[in-house]
Image (cartoon, rainbow, N blue to C red):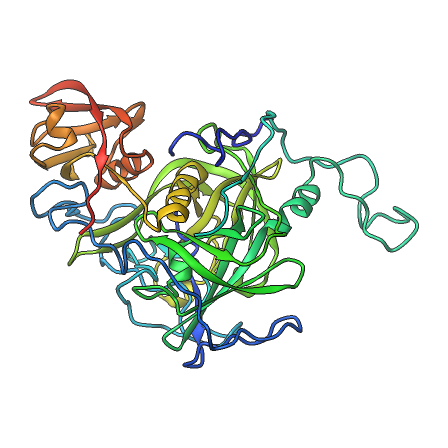
Length: 483
Protein backbone atom coordinates (compact mmCIF):
# COMPACT_ATOMS: atom_id res chain seq x y z
CA UNK A 1 0.00 0.00 0.00
CA UNK A 2 1.43 3.34 -0.96
CA UNK A 3 1.43 6.28 1.37
CA UNK A 4 0.54 9.82 0.46
CA UNK A 5 2.28 12.88 1.81
CA UNK A 6 5.75 11.76 0.88
CA UNK A 7 6.71 14.40 -1.65
CA UNK A 8 7.74 17.99 -1.12
CA UNK A 9 7.50 20.89 -3.50
CA UNK A 10 9.74 23.83 -2.72
CA UNK A 11 11.49 24.72 0.52
CA UNK A 12 8.48 23.90 2.65
CA UNK A 13 7.28 20.65 1.15
CA UNK A 14 3.65 20.61 0.10
CA UNK A 15 4.08 23.36 -2.46
CA UNK A 16 0.35 23.61 -2.99
CA UNK A 17 -1.38 25.82 -0.47
CA UNK A 18 -3.37 23.58 1.30
CA UNK A 19 -9.03 19.40 12.93
CA UNK A 20 -9.99 18.64 16.06
CA UNK A 21 -7.45 20.55 18.10
CA UNK A 22 -5.30 18.63 20.46
CA UNK A 23 -5.95 21.28 23.09
CA UNK A 24 -3.90 22.38 26.03
CA UNK A 25 -3.22 20.41 29.15
CA UNK A 26 -3.25 23.32 31.55
CA UNK A 27 -2.61 23.52 35.27
CA UNK A 28 -2.12 26.27 37.79
CA UNK A 29 1.39 27.51 38.31
CA UNK A 30 3.22 30.13 40.28
CA UNK A 31 2.62 33.73 39.34
CA UNK A 32 6.18 34.11 38.16
CA UNK A 33 5.67 31.36 35.62
CA UNK A 34 8.91 29.61 36.59
CA UNK A 35 9.01 26.09 35.16
CA UNK A 36 10.05 23.17 37.38
CA UNK A 37 13.25 21.39 36.49
CA UNK A 38 12.71 18.37 34.26
CA UNK A 39 14.93 15.35 33.90
CA UNK A 40 17.62 16.88 36.04
CA UNK A 41 17.75 20.01 33.92
CA UNK A 42 17.69 23.49 35.45
CA UNK A 43 14.28 25.06 35.83
CA UNK A 44 13.05 27.72 33.45
CA UNK A 45 13.82 30.99 35.16
CA UNK A 46 11.35 33.76 35.77
CA UNK A 47 13.45 36.52 34.19
CA UNK A 48 14.22 37.51 30.63
CA UNK A 49 10.95 36.26 29.24
CA UNK A 50 11.08 35.57 25.51
CA UNK A 51 9.58 38.25 23.33
CA UNK A 52 6.56 37.52 21.16
CA UNK A 53 5.69 38.96 17.78
CA UNK A 54 1.96 38.57 17.29
CA UNK A 55 0.46 39.69 14.02
CA UNK A 56 -3.10 39.45 15.30
CA UNK A 57 -3.34 39.58 19.08
CA UNK A 58 -6.11 37.86 20.93
CA UNK A 59 -8.62 35.90 18.93
CA UNK A 60 -8.12 38.01 15.82
CA UNK A 61 -11.84 38.70 15.41
CA UNK A 62 -13.25 38.49 11.95
CA UNK A 63 -15.23 41.39 10.57
CA UNK A 64 -18.62 41.75 12.21
CA UNK A 65 -20.37 41.09 8.92
CA UNK A 66 -19.30 37.44 8.88
CA UNK A 67 -16.35 35.15 8.43
CA UNK A 68 -16.32 35.50 4.66
CA UNK A 69 -16.08 39.27 4.53
CA UNK A 70 -19.65 39.81 3.44
CA UNK A 71 -22.03 42.07 5.39
CA UNK A 72 -25.13 40.82 7.06
CA UNK A 73 -26.01 39.37 10.43
CA UNK A 74 -26.98 35.81 11.08
CA UNK A 75 -24.18 34.12 9.20
CA UNK A 76 -23.84 30.54 10.40
CA UNK A 77 -26.96 30.56 12.49
CA UNK A 78 -27.57 26.84 12.82
CA UNK A 79 -31.24 25.82 12.88
CA UNK A 80 -30.55 22.82 15.07
CA UNK A 81 -27.94 20.34 16.24
CA UNK A 82 -25.43 19.42 13.57
CA UNK A 83 -22.14 17.58 13.66
CA UNK A 84 -19.59 19.90 15.24
CA UNK A 85 -22.16 22.69 15.14
CA UNK A 86 -21.89 25.78 17.37
CA UNK A 87 -24.71 25.17 19.79
CA UNK A 88 -23.23 26.59 22.96
CA UNK A 89 -20.77 28.88 21.21
CA UNK A 90 -18.04 28.16 23.72
CA UNK A 91 -15.28 25.56 23.88
CA UNK A 92 -13.75 25.31 27.35
CA UNK A 93 -10.05 24.57 27.42
CA UNK A 94 -9.41 20.85 27.13
CA UNK A 95 -7.63 20.04 30.33
CA UNK A 96 -8.35 22.55 33.03
CA UNK A 97 -6.64 23.73 36.20
CA UNK A 98 -5.19 21.06 38.40
CA UNK A 99 -1.93 19.42 39.27
CA UNK A 100 0.09 17.56 36.65
CA UNK A 101 -1.17 14.03 36.25
CA UNK A 102 -4.07 14.63 38.64
CA UNK A 103 -7.77 15.05 38.20
CA UNK A 104 -8.89 17.83 35.90
CA UNK A 105 -11.75 19.55 37.74
CA UNK A 106 -14.55 21.27 35.82
CA UNK A 107 -13.90 24.81 34.74
CA UNK A 108 -15.98 27.61 33.38
CA UNK A 109 -15.99 28.19 29.63
CA UNK A 110 -13.81 31.11 28.66
CA UNK A 111 -13.26 33.13 25.55
CA UNK A 112 -9.94 33.07 23.80
CA UNK A 113 -7.48 30.71 22.20
CA UNK A 114 -7.79 28.00 24.81
CA UNK A 115 -10.68 26.40 22.97
CA UNK A 116 -14.46 26.33 22.87
CA UNK A 117 -16.94 23.54 23.33
CA UNK A 118 -19.56 22.88 20.68
CA UNK A 119 -22.07 20.83 22.63
CA UNK A 120 -24.35 18.74 20.49
CA UNK A 121 -26.68 17.38 23.14
CA UNK A 122 -26.54 14.44 25.48
CA UNK A 123 -24.41 11.61 24.18
CA UNK A 124 -23.31 13.56 21.10
CA UNK A 125 -19.78 14.37 20.02
CA UNK A 126 -17.96 17.52 20.98
CA UNK A 127 -14.69 18.93 19.72
CA UNK A 128 -11.94 19.75 22.16
CA UNK A 129 -8.51 21.27 21.78
CA UNK A 130 -5.78 19.02 23.07
CA UNK A 131 -2.97 21.12 24.39
CA UNK A 132 -1.82 20.37 27.86
CA UNK A 133 -1.98 22.60 30.54
CA UNK A 134 12.49 36.10 13.10
CA UNK A 135 14.81 33.29 12.98
CA UNK A 136 17.48 32.13 10.57
CA UNK A 137 17.13 30.88 7.04
CA UNK A 138 14.13 28.72 6.28
CA UNK A 139 15.46 25.38 5.14
CA UNK A 140 13.00 22.63 5.97
CA UNK A 141 13.87 19.06 5.07
CA UNK A 142 11.74 17.64 2.29
CA UNK A 143 10.64 14.10 1.62
CA UNK A 144 12.58 12.23 -1.01
CA UNK A 145 9.71 11.89 -3.45
CA UNK A 146 9.34 8.12 -3.12
CA UNK A 147 5.92 6.54 -3.22
CA UNK A 148 6.22 5.15 0.29
CA UNK A 149 5.02 1.85 1.64
CA UNK A 150 2.69 0.67 4.34
CA UNK A 151 3.90 0.10 7.88
CA UNK A 152 5.33 -3.39 8.05
CA UNK A 153 7.27 -5.78 10.22
CA UNK A 154 10.15 -8.04 9.31
CA UNK A 155 10.71 -11.75 9.33
CA UNK A 156 13.98 -11.03 11.12
CA UNK A 157 14.45 -10.82 14.91
CA UNK A 158 12.29 -8.44 16.93
CA UNK A 159 12.62 -7.11 20.43
CA UNK A 160 11.06 -9.57 22.85
CA UNK A 161 11.88 -12.66 20.81
CA UNK A 162 13.61 -15.44 22.78
CA UNK A 163 17.36 -15.14 22.19
CA UNK A 164 16.64 -12.64 19.44
CA UNK A 165 20.10 -11.16 19.52
CA UNK A 166 21.87 -12.91 22.34
CA UNK A 167 22.16 -9.79 24.50
CA UNK A 168 20.07 -7.12 26.13
CA UNK A 169 20.55 -4.44 23.50
CA UNK A 170 17.45 -3.34 21.57
CA UNK A 171 16.99 -5.19 18.31
CA UNK A 172 17.60 -3.05 15.24
CA UNK A 173 14.37 -1.69 13.81
CA UNK A 174 13.07 -3.52 10.74
CA UNK A 175 13.02 -1.25 7.70
CA UNK A 176 9.64 0.38 7.21
CA UNK A 177 8.39 -0.52 10.68
CA UNK A 178 6.80 1.85 13.18
CA UNK A 179 9.90 1.31 15.30
CA UNK A 180 12.17 2.52 12.50
CA UNK A 181 9.99 5.55 11.64
CA UNK A 182 9.67 6.53 15.30
CA UNK A 183 13.43 6.37 15.85
CA UNK A 184 13.93 8.86 13.01
CA UNK A 185 11.09 11.25 13.83
CA UNK A 186 11.34 11.41 17.64
CA UNK A 187 14.37 13.77 17.62
CA UNK A 188 12.29 16.23 15.56
CA UNK A 189 9.34 16.38 17.99
CA UNK A 190 9.54 18.46 21.16
CA UNK A 191 7.46 19.10 24.24
CA UNK A 192 6.56 22.70 25.02
CA UNK A 193 5.79 24.35 28.36
CA UNK A 194 4.26 27.79 28.67
CA UNK A 195 3.49 30.16 31.53
CA UNK A 196 1.00 32.99 31.34
CA UNK A 197 -0.63 35.05 34.10
CA UNK A 198 0.11 32.47 36.77
CA UNK A 199 -1.23 29.54 34.72
CA UNK A 200 0.90 26.91 33.08
CA UNK A 201 0.22 24.67 30.11
CA UNK A 202 1.96 22.23 27.83
CA UNK A 203 1.86 20.90 24.32
CA UNK A 204 4.03 19.58 21.53
CA UNK A 205 5.93 20.99 18.58
CA UNK A 206 7.79 19.96 15.43
CA UNK A 207 11.31 21.09 14.50
CA UNK A 208 11.34 22.71 11.06
CA UNK A 209 14.94 23.84 10.76
CA UNK A 210 18.35 23.05 12.18
CA UNK A 211 18.68 26.60 13.49
CA UNK A 212 15.78 26.38 15.90
CA UNK A 213 12.48 27.09 14.09
CA UNK A 214 9.64 25.06 15.62
CA UNK A 215 5.98 24.85 14.59
CA UNK A 216 3.16 24.27 17.06
CA UNK A 217 -0.44 25.36 17.67
CA UNK A 218 -1.51 28.89 18.52
CA UNK A 219 -3.53 27.58 21.44
CA UNK A 220 -0.38 25.98 22.86
CA UNK A 221 1.69 29.17 23.00
CA UNK A 222 -1.26 31.26 24.19
CA UNK A 223 -1.70 28.99 27.23
CA UNK A 224 -5.44 29.26 26.82
CA UNK A 225 -5.46 33.06 26.96
CA UNK A 226 -6.05 35.87 24.53
CA UNK A 227 -2.42 36.76 23.96
CA UNK A 228 1.13 35.44 23.99
CA UNK A 229 2.37 33.41 26.93
CA UNK A 230 4.87 35.19 29.14
CA UNK A 231 7.36 32.32 28.92
CA UNK A 232 7.88 29.44 26.54
CA UNK A 233 10.29 26.57 27.15
CA UNK A 234 11.13 23.65 24.88
CA UNK A 235 12.25 20.18 25.96
CA UNK A 236 14.11 18.07 23.39
CA UNK A 237 14.27 14.30 22.98
CA UNK A 238 17.89 14.20 24.22
CA UNK A 239 16.86 15.71 27.56
CA UNK A 240 18.14 19.21 26.82
CA UNK A 241 16.02 22.31 27.33
CA UNK A 242 15.91 25.85 25.95
CA UNK A 243 13.80 28.97 26.22
CA UNK A 244 11.95 30.11 23.11
CA UNK A 245 10.42 33.27 21.70
CA UNK A 246 7.28 33.44 19.60
CA UNK A 247 7.90 34.59 16.04
CA UNK A 248 4.21 34.65 15.18
CA UNK A 249 0.91 33.03 16.04
CA UNK A 250 -2.36 32.85 14.11
CA UNK A 251 -5.66 32.03 15.86
CA UNK A 252 -7.54 31.51 12.60
CA UNK A 253 -5.38 28.61 11.40
CA UNK A 254 -4.25 27.74 14.95
CA UNK A 255 -0.62 27.65 13.84
CA UNK A 256 2.29 29.28 15.69
CA UNK A 257 6.03 29.43 15.10
CA UNK A 258 8.60 29.70 17.89
CA UNK A 259 12.40 29.95 17.85
CA UNK A 260 15.12 28.63 20.14
CA UNK A 261 18.77 29.67 20.01
CA UNK A 262 20.14 26.35 18.76
CA UNK A 263 21.80 25.39 15.49
CA UNK A 264 22.09 21.64 15.97
CA UNK A 265 18.48 20.46 15.78
CA UNK A 266 17.10 17.63 13.65
CA UNK A 267 14.41 18.97 11.31
CA UNK A 268 11.44 16.81 10.45
CA UNK A 269 10.94 15.61 6.88
CA UNK A 270 8.07 17.70 5.49
CA UNK A 271 5.67 15.90 3.20
CA UNK A 272 2.49 16.83 1.33
CA UNK A 273 -1.14 16.56 2.29
CA UNK A 274 -2.64 16.89 -1.19
CA UNK A 275 -2.20 13.24 -2.15
CA UNK A 276 -3.30 11.45 1.01
CA UNK A 277 -5.73 8.53 0.97
CA UNK A 278 -8.28 7.28 3.47
CA UNK A 279 -7.03 4.09 5.07
CA UNK A 280 -3.30 4.75 4.80
CA UNK A 281 -1.15 4.17 7.86
CA UNK A 282 -0.12 7.11 10.04
CA UNK A 283 1.87 7.65 13.23
CA UNK A 284 1.21 10.37 15.81
CA UNK A 285 4.06 11.63 18.01
CA UNK A 286 3.79 14.13 20.84
CA UNK A 287 3.56 14.68 24.59
CA UNK A 288 0.08 13.69 25.80
CA UNK A 289 -0.41 14.50 29.50
CA UNK A 290 3.23 15.57 29.62
CA UNK A 291 4.51 12.14 28.55
CA UNK A 292 7.12 13.30 26.04
CA UNK A 293 7.98 11.16 23.05
CA UNK A 294 4.74 9.19 22.99
CA UNK A 295 4.15 7.25 19.75
CA UNK A 296 0.73 5.99 18.63
CA UNK A 297 -0.41 4.47 15.36
CA UNK A 298 -3.55 4.35 13.28
CA UNK A 299 -4.91 5.16 9.85
CA UNK A 300 -6.37 8.17 8.08
CA UNK A 301 -10.08 7.85 8.79
CA UNK A 302 -11.30 10.74 6.62
CA UNK A 303 -10.02 13.76 4.70
CA UNK A 304 -11.31 17.32 4.32
CA UNK A 305 -13.27 17.08 7.55
CA UNK A 306 -14.49 20.61 8.46
CA UNK A 307 -13.96 20.90 12.20
CA UNK A 308 -14.92 24.06 14.04
CA UNK A 309 -12.72 24.47 17.11
CA UNK A 310 -13.81 27.92 18.27
CA UNK A 311 -16.36 30.61 17.57
CA UNK A 312 -17.09 33.83 19.41
CA UNK A 313 -20.68 34.92 18.74
CA UNK A 314 -19.84 38.47 19.83
CA UNK A 315 -17.11 38.96 17.25
CA UNK A 316 -18.01 36.20 14.76
CA UNK A 317 -14.49 34.87 15.15
CA UNK A 318 -14.17 31.32 13.87
CA UNK A 319 -11.44 28.72 13.66
CA UNK A 320 -12.39 25.97 11.24
CA UNK A 321 -9.74 23.52 10.11
CA UNK A 322 -9.84 21.40 6.98
CA UNK A 323 -8.87 18.38 8.99
CA UNK A 324 -7.22 15.06 8.46
CA UNK A 325 -9.19 12.67 10.67
CA UNK A 326 -7.28 9.80 12.26
CA UNK A 327 -7.90 7.03 14.75
CA UNK A 328 -4.34 7.24 16.09
CA UNK A 329 -4.64 8.03 19.80
CA UNK A 330 -4.40 11.80 20.43
CA UNK A 331 -4.85 13.23 23.93
CA UNK A 332 -4.36 16.50 25.86
CA UNK A 333 -0.77 17.59 25.32
CA UNK A 334 -0.57 16.23 21.75
CA UNK A 335 -1.41 19.68 20.35
CA UNK A 336 1.24 20.83 17.90
CA UNK A 337 2.75 17.38 17.55
CA UNK A 338 3.47 15.39 14.41
CA UNK A 339 1.25 13.22 12.28
CA UNK A 340 3.53 11.39 9.85
CA UNK A 341 3.06 8.81 7.14
CA UNK A 342 4.65 5.35 7.11
CA UNK A 343 7.93 6.80 5.84
CA UNK A 344 8.14 9.51 8.49
CA UNK A 345 7.06 12.43 6.27
CA UNK A 346 5.12 15.10 8.19
CA UNK A 347 1.58 15.26 6.80
CA UNK A 348 -0.29 17.06 9.59
CA UNK A 349 -0.16 18.90 12.92
CA UNK A 350 -2.24 17.16 15.59
CA UNK A 351 -4.68 19.68 16.99
CA UNK A 352 -7.98 18.37 18.34
CA UNK A 353 -10.11 15.39 19.20
CA UNK A 354 -13.79 14.59 19.30
CA UNK A 355 -15.15 13.25 22.55
CA UNK A 356 -18.51 12.26 23.95
CA UNK A 357 -20.57 14.98 25.60
CA UNK A 358 -22.17 14.71 28.98
CA UNK A 359 -19.65 16.16 31.40
CA UNK A 360 -15.96 16.70 32.05
CA UNK A 361 -15.49 13.10 33.18
CA UNK A 362 -16.51 11.88 29.75
CA UNK A 363 -14.36 14.41 27.91
CA UNK A 364 -11.03 13.11 29.10
CA UNK A 365 -9.27 11.63 26.12
CA UNK A 366 -9.17 9.85 22.81
CA UNK A 367 -12.12 7.87 21.50
CA UNK A 368 -10.42 7.30 18.17
CA UNK A 369 -11.53 10.54 16.52
CA UNK A 370 -8.51 12.80 16.21
CA UNK A 371 -7.91 15.72 13.86
CA UNK A 372 -4.79 17.25 12.35
CA UNK A 373 -4.19 20.41 10.31
CA UNK A 374 -2.99 19.36 6.82
CA UNK A 375 0.69 20.14 6.39
CA UNK A 376 0.24 22.05 3.11
CA UNK A 377 -1.83 24.68 4.90
CA UNK A 378 0.23 24.58 8.10
CA UNK A 379 3.55 25.09 6.29
CA UNK A 380 2.20 27.98 4.21
CA UNK A 381 1.04 29.74 7.36
CA UNK A 382 4.26 28.89 9.24
CA UNK A 383 6.36 30.42 6.45
CA UNK A 384 4.41 33.68 6.65
CA UNK A 385 4.56 33.75 10.45
CA UNK A 386 8.30 33.22 10.45
CA UNK A 387 8.88 35.90 7.85
CA UNK A 388 6.41 38.59 8.95
CA UNK A 389 4.79 37.52 12.22
CA UNK A 390 1.40 37.52 10.46
CA UNK A 391 -0.56 35.12 8.28
CA UNK A 392 -2.91 35.82 5.39
CA UNK A 393 -6.10 33.87 4.72
CA UNK A 394 -8.20 33.45 1.62
CA UNK A 395 -11.57 35.20 1.38
CA UNK A 396 -14.46 34.56 -0.99
CA UNK A 397 -16.49 37.60 0.08
CA UNK A 398 -19.83 36.15 1.17
CA UNK A 399 -21.80 35.53 4.34
CA UNK A 400 -23.58 32.18 4.45
CA UNK A 401 -25.82 29.93 6.48
CA UNK A 402 -26.66 26.22 6.11
CA UNK A 403 -29.37 25.49 3.56
CA UNK A 404 -31.61 23.81 6.12
CA UNK A 405 -32.74 21.39 3.41
CA UNK A 406 -31.59 17.84 4.01
CA UNK A 407 -32.39 16.98 0.40
CA UNK A 408 -30.33 19.87 -0.96
CA UNK A 409 -27.42 20.58 1.40
CA UNK A 410 -25.14 23.50 0.82
CA UNK A 411 -24.20 26.97 2.03
CA UNK A 412 -26.84 29.65 1.37
CA UNK A 413 -25.35 33.04 0.48
CA UNK A 414 -27.03 35.57 2.75
CA UNK A 415 -24.94 38.51 1.58
CA UNK A 416 -22.21 39.33 -0.93
CA UNK A 417 -19.42 41.81 -0.27
CA UNK A 418 -19.58 44.60 -2.88
CA UNK A 419 -16.47 44.44 -5.03
CA UNK A 420 -15.41 41.15 -3.44
CA UNK A 421 -14.33 37.93 -5.17
CA UNK A 422 -17.81 36.36 -5.26
CA UNK A 423 -19.42 39.59 -6.49
CA UNK A 424 -16.86 39.83 -9.27
CA UNK A 425 -17.66 36.28 -10.33
CA UNK A 426 -21.41 36.97 -10.42
CA UNK A 427 -22.47 34.84 -7.45
CA UNK A 428 -25.71 36.43 -6.16
CA UNK A 429 -27.46 36.55 -2.81
CA UNK A 430 -29.61 33.51 -2.01
CA UNK A 431 -27.43 31.29 -4.19
CA UNK A 432 -26.65 27.91 -2.62
CA UNK A 433 -22.98 26.96 -2.93
CA UNK A 434 -22.71 23.19 -3.31
CA UNK A 435 -19.14 22.61 -4.43
CA UNK A 436 -15.66 24.18 -4.44
CA UNK A 437 -13.61 22.59 -7.21
CA UNK A 438 -14.46 18.88 -6.83
CA UNK A 439 -15.24 19.13 -3.14
CA UNK A 440 -18.90 18.94 -2.03
CA UNK A 441 -20.06 21.72 0.30
CA UNK A 442 -22.76 20.68 2.76
CA UNK A 443 -22.59 23.52 5.29
CA UNK A 444 -21.18 26.94 6.07
CA UNK A 445 -18.29 25.41 8.01
CA UNK A 446 -17.47 23.18 5.05
CA UNK A 447 -17.20 26.29 2.87
CA UNK A 448 -14.95 28.00 5.43
CA UNK A 449 -12.65 24.97 5.57
CA UNK A 450 -12.51 24.63 1.80
CA UNK A 451 -11.68 28.31 1.21
CA UNK A 452 -9.10 28.49 4.00
CA UNK A 453 -7.30 25.48 2.60
CA UNK A 454 -6.30 27.80 -0.24
CA UNK A 455 -4.07 30.85 -0.33
CA UNK A 456 -5.12 34.38 -1.30
CA UNK A 457 -4.87 34.72 -5.06
CA UNK A 458 -5.80 31.12 -5.82
CA UNK A 459 -8.59 30.57 -8.34
CA UNK A 460 -11.29 28.04 -7.50
CA UNK A 461 -14.32 26.72 -9.36
CA UNK A 462 -17.50 27.35 -7.37
CA UNK A 463 -20.66 25.39 -8.18
CA UNK A 464 -23.93 26.88 -6.97
CA UNK A 465 -27.64 26.82 -7.62
CA UNK A 466 -29.58 29.99 -8.37
CA UNK A 467 -33.33 29.83 -8.89
CA UNK A 468 -33.12 26.08 -9.32
CA UNK A 469 -30.43 26.29 -12.00
CA UNK A 470 -26.94 24.88 -11.45
CA UNK A 471 -24.13 27.25 -12.39
CA UNK A 472 -20.35 27.47 -12.03
CA UNK A 473 -18.05 30.43 -11.58
CA UNK A 474 -14.30 30.92 -11.51
CA UNK A 475 -13.47 32.87 -8.37
CA UNK A 476 -10.08 34.41 -7.63
CA UNK A 477 -9.85 34.44 -3.86
CA UNK A 478 -9.05 37.65 -2.03
CA UNK A 479 -7.42 38.25 1.35
CA UNK A 480 -9.45 38.11 4.54
CA UNK A 481 -9.39 41.45 6.33
CA UNK A 482 -9.21 40.82 10.05
CA UNK A 483 -10.34 43.73 12.23
